[in-house]
Image (cartoon, rainbow, N blue to C red; front, side):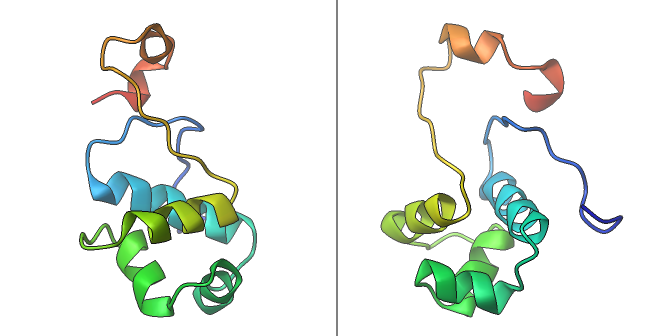
Length: 94
């Protein structure tokens, strides 16, 4: 990643839509994809991908999941007290 793309944790607890957006943007850039190319590869519009990257709401869940999958990411839902969450580095927790 370049100086404009901050380093993000490999696993991150999501508390805001912006958290997902930062991960999406970082993984897109890490793969060397322009936003228009990534949108086309994932079957979404540039506007939708831009809204996701900027943490805007109102994006359909199926579109979010398609983008995550297309960029090699996944969404995990777990109880807040799950043992897996206790294993995360403290800098990934709110």
